[in-house]
Image 1 (cartoon, rainbow, N blue to C red):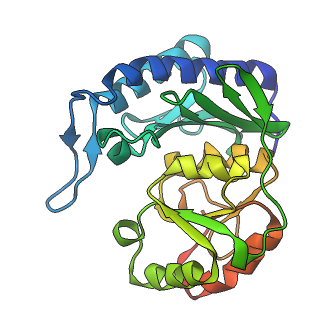
Image 2: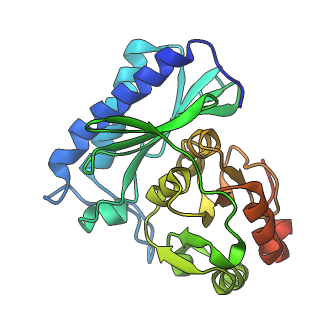
Length: 274
């Protein structure tokens, strides 16, 4: 990963962004939270006052401290997306978990420098965790301090613990076939954790996550966290993840990634880097 100038200052600012977003979100968790459906006919796409309020709070702090920076967010769109520094935001990744009262939603905040993701965090304020990473390494910040993060290495595919969010809802027919091969080849599968599962790859608890249909704000914040912890990511054809998201594999090491890619190869033509 390219290392931007003033990384320590940006790292500290990212911690502050997590604190500010948590202050907005937590009072609305497990209470009436202004649920709306922004999806079309037959498509449930929930958004809450917590999603919108948290992104607004993050954007306000960025505008006050770094007015020259761009922002791309799920709720409020793009502002200077071609700036040298661009923040990429998903205020609540896992809104369905949020409205169900399940504490596996996260706040994703990533930073691009000259077009590449260089700094990111996966925050879960209800549990009190921020997984933060960059080229210098990744760490878990919690109530009593912090500790380094390291992915689990040397796990063969047949012993791997793998996660995905919701294959029925997010995978097309060909992707479901590929997922069935992955599930049959691995030891244990977990569902429904959204980006919290990405944090567990960085923490060494999960070996791999397989996803499809990701937007930029779903994945960019996680890339520095996983890479900084020693993990690897690619699309389903083994190419680097593009800036627009897509189908992704996140693994603890290169050997595990390479062992699962052949199971996904029938979709190689669909997994085009941007």
